[in-house]
Image (tube, rainbow, N blue to C red; front, side, top):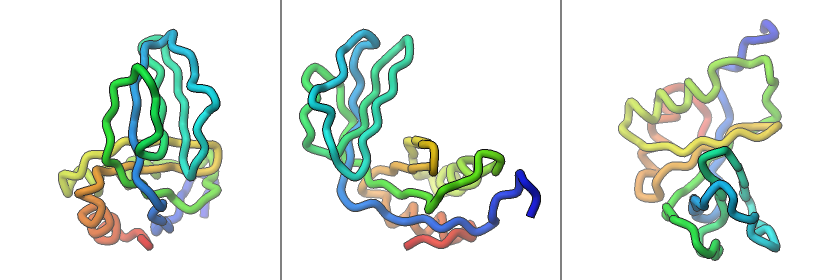
Length: 132
């Protein structure tokens, strides 16, 4: 396999729990203490502060989109591999499943609406991935 070639079949695992995506103004303080859980992500841009936490975690003053389930790609993934998110998001887009994608140093996390979690698993399997 070349340095940039990713495996054609990715191992994808469902993450326990439900998640919420919060939006705060760009100058908002990080919530303290920072929530803990299976997945917690804090991203600041000039336009916003986005926080992903287990559903039910209070983030005062935020606009919230709740009801997300999560799949993670079993990693670590090489930084030289190309097309990982494209492969997953294309399969889900073709099945009309909305996504919210996060990447970390080791892997990618795909959040899908909780009521579409089974549709997402079917779409990912149909595109050749190992979904557990």
